[in-house]
Every structure is written in structure tokens, then in C-alpha cells.
Image 1 (cartoon, rainbow, N blue to C red):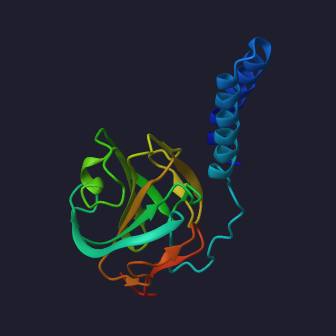
Image 2: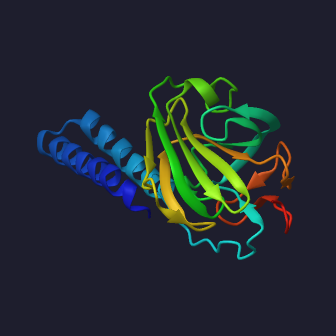
Image 3: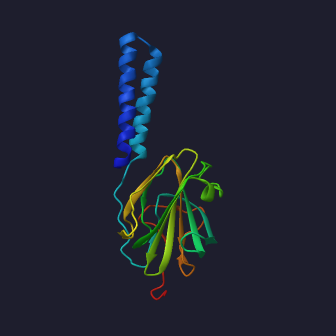
Length: 217
């Protein structure tokens, strides 16, 4: 289980035990029912915060998915903040049943980080990209600038990103998590070969979403 979920699981478990004790002590069936719900939620949290072993791609030309989920957008767009120009955008939606640990899509140096306070629209809607709470991270790589964005959804309320400016990162390196359903986006140079399409299901750190040519610069 990912360490970010420990506090959630412990709080729910303690709450469930307390409700069970009070229910038995004072013979309140309603508290026993609440206790049961608490135990169910604590078990679901253990499932939600699972952190299975992933084997990152070794090929230096591949871009990997930063998360588990379903591809919902593949389009050419403008990325104004870090790339400051046109880019290929790949958006991935994570349901509450997906693994939510996040991985770096490509090796590079962290040159940009920005936190945006926003709203909590459904993560699969286009407006979630710009209006929802999000963290945009920009990397300088051997193939130019790339960026990736963690965004909340209706249920997700917390973004965790352990990266810092100046960090050197590897493809498939674990860097954070989004709690309870959300969205991730990757912005790549136009000269990449996109390997996914809308509707594809991807695995964090392992699924190839794009590749670079050997001499892309």
C-alpha cells in the first residue's frame, strides 16, 4: 500500500473500532451499522491505495503513461505556461478503481512547477483540464520540453507531488498520487509518434503512449 494512504486507513479503522465499542457498550444497533460501514471504507481505502510493483520501460526513446486509466483525449493543442507553443496532448482519466500512484512519463530535469487553485468538475470533462485544481510540472529533456498535469475530479480532493525544481528524474520514476479519482495529462513535442488512441487503457510506468525518433533534435 502507498504510504499516502496510511493516515486515511488508520482514521477509518479507529473510527470503526470506536463505533463498534460504543454500539456494544450501550447496545446501539445504529452505531454497529456505522461501524460496519467504517470497516468497509477502511478496506476499500487499502484497495484504493494499493501500490503494485511496476517495471519501467528501459528504451530511452519511449514516453510512458504517468498513471493507470483510460485515454480520453489525444489532440494537438497550445500549452501556454511551460512549452509556450503547440504540443501533443494526451489525457487519461482515472476512476476510483484504478491504481492512483503517478509516474514520471519521461526522463529530464524539473524546470517548472505551478499549483492552480480551482474547482472540482468531473475529471472526464474537457473543462476539468483548465478549471479544476491542478499541478503542472515541466521537464527539460534531450528531446525538448514536455509537461504533465495532475488534476482533481469531483471526488479527488488532494494532489500529491514530491518533485522539486532542479530534480533530475527518470522515465517511470514514482513521484506522487492523486486521491480518489482524477485526471492526468501529458504535453509532448509535435515530433513524437503517438502510440495510443481514445478508449485505450494504460498502465502507469509501463504502457508506451508515445515514442521519439533517434534524431529528433
